[in-house]
Structures are given as structure tokens and as C-alpha cells.
Image 1 (cartoon, rainbow, N blue to C red):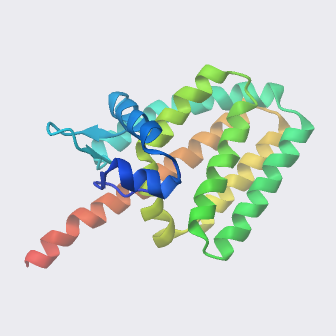
Image 2 (image 1 turned 90 degrees about the vertical axis):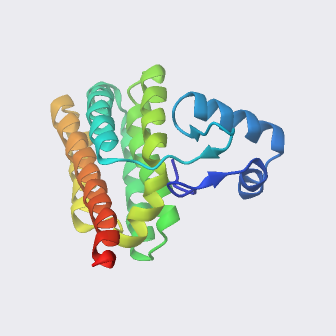
Length: 205
């Protein structure tokens, strides 16, 4: 989810273990489990790769995410406490500070914390696990998007809208704000994929 590994990157057990500073056995099990769940791609020779997202898959994942995360947002709006809202506001402030410093790995981490602090407030643990899986499916693109685009003005505005909706505790208002943020991120991804796919054609000319 943090986008530490790039799309299309081959993952070796030793390299992942070194990057995460853990032993080989849990990494081996985790890679095979993630491949079985469709989060990673296992080739016929047994090699494990970070999938390359296609436009079609992004569209599909976005439809699934909006359904799941809108539900979590509606439930959270009815249950969230003042303390949880205050914590989410602090996370958002730290994320803006990290973005100003162009500390994009930290921005990615705090963006995850921001959203999942909201979703966990729903009290629906199984739903949160389903959402986590979908985030992991496009996490590899986060370290491509943020260094190039940052948490752009519209993204920051989206988060402020989410914060205001949290304070209102209006389920539909919060749900709508979350969906707008998801669609903005998806549109950014789609634009980036179009741009990257167009580069070889330009070079060929």
C-alpha cells in the first residue's frame, strides 16, 4: 500500500526481506499469499512480480472501491467520536506538511492513515479488510504518482472537504466526499498511464 515497489518489478524473497528488515520465511509466505489473492502476479516459472495496472483494471477497481469505501464512510459518520475526528485532522495536517517538504513516501503513508482512520471508525472490520486488499492492488503506483504530481491542490481540497463532512457527521456528505477523492485519484492514474503509453510511440516517430 505504501508503494515501496514499482509496477512490473520482480520481487525476490531476499530483496523484500532486506527492504523490510525481516527474515526470509515470513516474506516467502507473504509473497505467495499475496499472489494467491491477486495482489501480486506469479509467473509460470514461479517468479513473483508487482502487477502492471491497465486502464481497464483501474476502472474496475475504482468501481469496487467506491462501493466499499462509500459504505464504510456512511457507517463511520454515524459512529465516529470527537477524539477520532481530532486524530484524523492531525494526520491530515501532518500529510500537508510532508507534502510541502516533498517527502512523498511519508505523504503516501499518511494518506493511508487518513483514510483508514475513517474506515476503521465504521466498526466493520471485515469491510476494512476488503478495502485494504483493493488499496494494495494499486499501491505500486503511489510511488510513481506522488513524486510527479504530489498531493496536488485538488487532492488537498478533497481532504478538507472530507474533514468538514466528518465534523457534520452526515453519512451521505461524507460518502460523497470520499467518492470524489477516489475518482480524482483514479483519473490521475488513468492520465498517467495514457501519458506513459504514449511515450514509446513518440520516440518511434
